[in-house]
Image 1: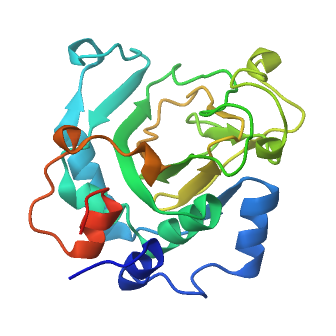
Image 2 (image 1 turned 180 degrees about the vertical axis):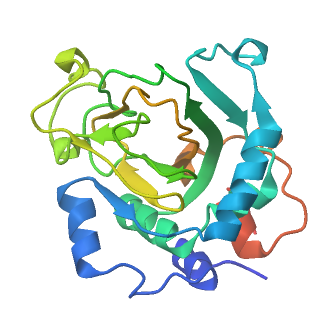
Image 3 (image 1 turned 135 degrees about the horizontal axis):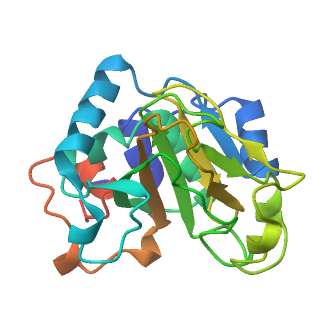
Length: 244
């Protein structure tokens, strides 16, 4: 089965003209982020939590340095997890922001421990120059809020000039920051230019999440570096960055 375009692939995965509401599209444009509620149901959250704990790797065993204040899970090889990341609402948001062919680049799990998780405000990509080449999706598997290190965002900063670290000296508080709150199964979608960071986990409660990276197809890795996906529908392979 041949996939003719990203729009064709998205339609086969359940994305339609009404997947996002006009207010949701407006928030993505004006704020650079949106929280999608109940993207994953209880059974799907349980499946993702099982994969997280099964693939958890202590920080000192990672091939690249990982902070000891956060538990990390290695999820790129979990095809079922990557497949769940192609939920229609998520894909609709990514397409709205990227406006071109894209692919799921990376999936990792994070869970800040008691006293850990704090980051300085930063952008995951550099100053705005046209549509962002990447989108960050945080899928929360536990309830999240100020007590367990939830993400803070500076709405609208995706439209402002400056480098990746222009907000890094803001400290623990910024007058414009919003700390995202919600329940397990909710998803935060962020423009790659948006200033954001994790906050400190002061309660010690789990805040397990998937950090999912979508990128424009021009940034796709060489075929030799891709995760083996096996026998999957053509539209899924297309979104995994493989030619269908």
